[in-house]
Length: 127
Image (cartoon, rainbow, N blue to C red):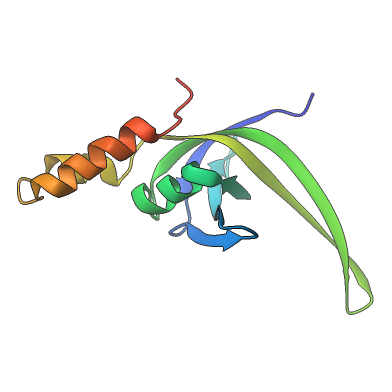
């Protein structure tokens, strides 16, 4: 079984790109505290509508829970074998994010609030 659950904070804003036939792909690095001291910095990749929501609603320092699977790969660069390990996320749960700031902002327009509410409904939070 290949299943991973991580909770941590983003080290920087997620990067969104489109692959193939307009497939949204977001990547970010998650800082996960170790049990005793220090942290691990883990690359996360997420696809589809969830990728767009990640880019739109979380930022550097946001806390998230990620559920997914480990994927490893290797490639040759300058005659040396390079290894890559990342998490392919099935679910990204927003534990702290921009949503609270937008919904609590009295200056936000009704259109912005309606769009935000619809995006929240569209999110597959997996709860």
